[in-house]
Image (cartoon, rainbow, N blue to C red; front, side, top):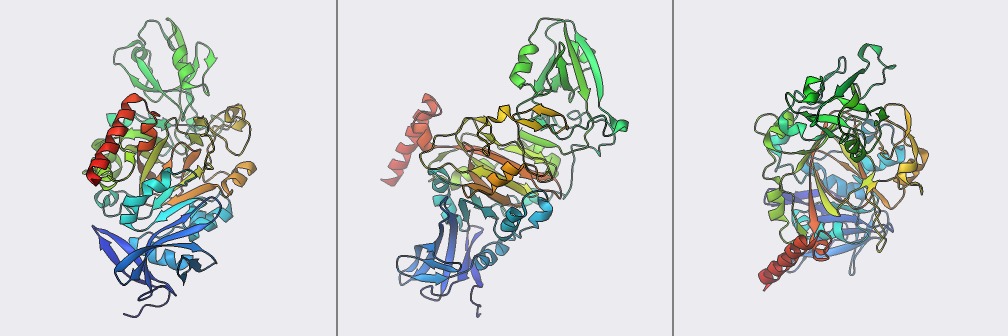
Length: 508
């Protein structure tokens, strides 16, 4: 059939995936090219990785964008608009960009406009071809100065049995906020081992008197006290995560989900979890002030092992992520990555929830598999040769340490809080809005079925778009190059050298 200029031809199929083919004016042969990836580097240059027709078959070609709709290779110039690439590459994967203004109403309009046209702002790559992804994605994301790599629709066929059961707007682990909720008592044990970010879910007493948080003072007179805590937010505060039946804590009326306000008279609402644990090691008796807050704001469940019963909470019976990492390991077997996490981590959050801007402690390549909702990611791309930032909370838009910033906590009380999030429903500080629009800051809008790779050793954050619950699976991989350098210790160094030897033997 005749195809209009810039239109899409039937895609080439590969093992259930499809590689988009688009007509490009000036392309050799029949005038079509196969799209591999569109890469943008920090200096603004854009490269189109493609294949063109040649007498011996399809051959790789690399085009540099030389004009609004023109691309130049070493021996040819083609004319192809970004809109035509999007029309050819995104719809056939059933990836239709949502209205980002509705998903992120408080973010800069220039940013959401750009993400409506293309799912990546700033440095990084959008991959279309499965073979290109398997052969090149790991190298793209690990090289100096690299941005995130997005493969739209990569998981559509892989997670269909799980994705189809996710109901828009379902919030199975929280109530409607009209009464106090024991956060972790009604969920499977596997989920109670995760981290519940309560920062934006706690409602100040003055806001809703009918459901004001109830404070409770208890004294534990004997040791061991019989309870364990988790962080209230990403790195600060404490919430009771487990209680030993019959223990002093249990007999005193402590419950899972109780937030620690004071320990022996010291306010610990925004203290580091490690400092709180030190206070809890004090000899008996110890006094605790606890608060059981209602949930009327957004809730974020994070870093929960994605075992079957945890996934089924959101996807219904039969949902499983057991084969996700092994399958990714097999498909990227030629990539310079070592997958040490066998079980992915489940992240589930209401629209409007967000992680704080931070740098991971270990330099892992993070894989994010989006199952439901719109997830927005920001990554501050380091210049080649620049030293890695300090691990922990970050505020790249200021020279001051994030821990010294005076910011408004999510419960509305001014405090010194190192955790700075950029949720989609709250106006950004002016400096943060300027930072996120910088050319060296990448922002990705990921849809259900998309796969995202990014370096966790750069300042980054995630924000869940409005319109329903957002659900994603994460797992990390170590760059073999870092392993060989000894970054992860002598044991991992030996594994890295063994991996290289095996690859060399296979190539001989």
